[in-house]
Image 1: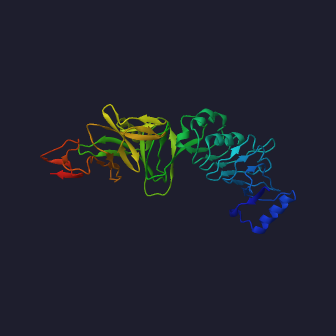
Image 2: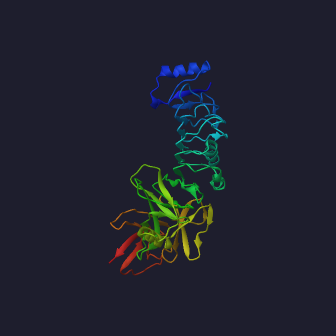
Amino acid sequence: MLFIEKAVKCGMSRAALLSIVLLLAMGGYAQSDCFTYEDGGKTIINGLTSMGEAADKLTIPSTVTAVRSGAFQYASSELTSLTVENEGNPAFESGLFGTTGTNTLTSIDMGNGMSVTNMIALLTSVGTPKGTIVASGFSGNKDIANETWSAVTWTNVSSVTLPAELVGSQEFGSADVYGRFNINKEIISFCTSATFLDDDQGSNQLFYVADGIEDDGRLHIQRVKYIAAGQGVLIHRSGSSSGYADVQRTGDIDDDNSQAKTDKALYNKNMLVGVTEATSIDATAGDYTNFVLKDGVFHRTTGGTIKANRAYLQIPTNKLARAERVTISFDNNEAGINILTSAPTQREEGSGCYDLQGRKVTQPTKGIYIMNGKKHVIK
């Protein structure tokens, strides 16, 4: 039997909940100002109704697999908030508000498990939301979004937050558009087809590019505020358990302010190569050696496939000829510059002395050398 349960935060007692069940059994409806649908072993929502006053908040549990046409018709006069529980991915039929219902939604949260197809079906079915839309994650082919976002009317939407991979260059009317970067590790690489601006509003997720090699073999990274379209970046989750960062989409980086000029110059020297589609790479590319990020460390690759929306590191072969990995250290200084310290420790298990280009040295002089697998400085 389908029934509507008032949300716990609304303070409904067990007796009141029993009254709802009895009313439904008798064909009546219960008054409520917010409710959570409980499927009672079923996974399809056919209709949501209440007596006297429609509910204003609806949460759809992750167990629900489908929501039928007209499901919100009688609960629609004050339905302002719709939430799909995390991991939920229900399919939505067209016309959720039926022929007589009115869309009064000001907030839609699609959770973190919705497929692109079902996200678009929901937005198309409810018509034009009048407030905010949030989807913290998605599954399925992101190309579907690029082809079908035009089916959604964004006129009255004030703010849209979608996974950064989905935002791209499509239009969202006059809404403020945010990209959500999901971060499941302390350090990840990323690349997206849109340009975003990190405005530092409460985010502990910081963005970096790699802009050069020092004479001592260190790899410079510098923080950027603009996450440029098509460019590879590193995202560092510093001092936070939060798994995502929201940044606002903006136009292409130009020279209209000092931050834009600084970041544009850094991207011109960026050694991180971003990909927006799964891409095969070789161990080397011309005069460069390729490194891929794994567990917070860049490792020399023998070739393989880089996942979509990720980045790999290209280092001039003559700079770190035999480096096997590049370790990462985020040590802030007053200038906001951080250092990635490379570890060109080939033959770590072996013996001998080598310079930073991997050449064996019999009589080392002043400089930095790798001796028996460890870095030494001779002054």
